[in-house]
Length: 114
Image 1 (cartoon, rainbow, N blue to C red):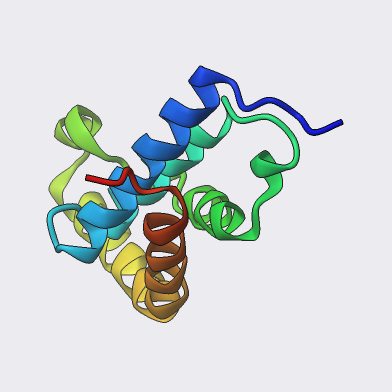
Image 2 (cartoon, helix red, strand yellow; image 1 turned 180 degrees about the horizontal axis):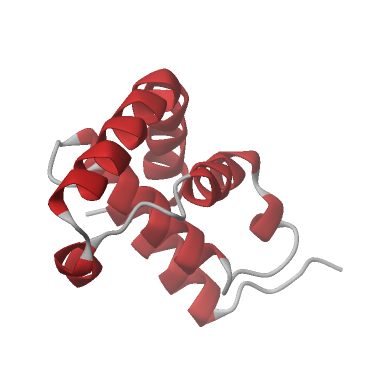
C-alpha cells in the first residue's frame, strides 16, 4: 500500500523547488535559500524530510545560524557584521557547488510543470 501525498506536502515540495530555481537563476542568495529551505523542510513527512538534497541546506543553515539575515542585520555593529559576512562568504564559497547541485536536483524533481 503506497503512501498518499498530502496536498500540504505537494505545496511544500513545489515551494522548495521554487527557492532552488531562484538560486539557480541568481535571484536569491545561497544563505537566504538555506534558511528558507531548512524552514520549509520541517513541514515534510518521512522519508522526504531526510532527503539528502534537503539536508545539505539544513547543515549549511546550521553552520550560519549566527550570521544575521534581514532586519536583524540592522542591530549589529558594522564591524562585527562585516566579520560575520566575510566568514559566511568564505564558507559558502566552499559549499557552493554542493548547494547548486542540490538546487538542480530539487528543481528538477519537485518543480511544478508549466
